[in-house]
Image 1 (tube, rainbow, N blue to C red):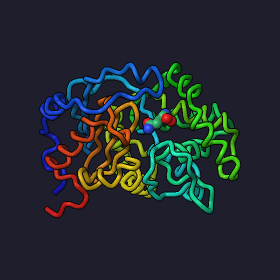
Image 2: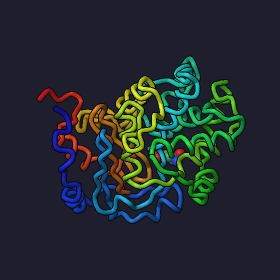
Image 3: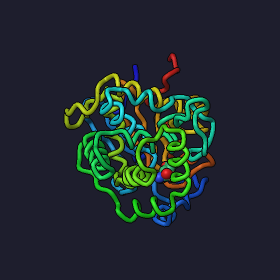
Length: 309
Ligand code: GLN
């Protein structure tokens, strides 16, 4: 019996247990993220019948960053009738999110959860040019969240201006013939996706939409097929926390995606979606409080995929 008590779970108590943990460091990748308050912590969860529960600070707004990657992968699978599976690998890398490395032999990105993969998946969603693809992603993300999400233009601009490694990855994939749009266009679309503003509540609804097999449990809208949801959650499970994915699966046991802004989105299939936001990160770029809160939530609600009890 998974998530037996999700509806009465006290997320404020969970949050308060996390606050004393002061480990980790806020990213310095772009000025807007470096300014984040390290004391912030918000948690939200959404059951599959659309019941949303949240702690204090779950309405604090932040840029989604890499927590967007599962949803962009989902939209790419949807828009290509799953032909996207031929364009991107699905094996974990054991390396950092921005490693300059492609799949050997094919020159494809290793998986859709690292930067190379998200640059590729965001280049193959519907749309004839960069602006149209960015629009497609914005509309798709809004459907996942059940509300209209907007992009922070300053973050998108900084992301693009300071995104030299991402540009290097885009050029490398172009040289392999695996990225088939202009490198600059790929960066523009990816940067806008990362700069999409959410809060923990919106991100939890997004996770719940995957966990519910592609139907947003709050709006009732089918956003992607059940098959696509399964594909995406599988890859979150194996690759979602980069080189920390093995440790995450043992300790938390719930498919998830981490992000440099300190957000984590979780999808426990058939049970619930959840999100934690707290900016200080560990060495793998995972929110320290987010990891602890997720492990606690998983234990308390019996969400671990491999726990037989
Ligand atoms: N936008 C960030 C980047 O491309 C996202 C990275 C992350 O959240 N890990 O560097």
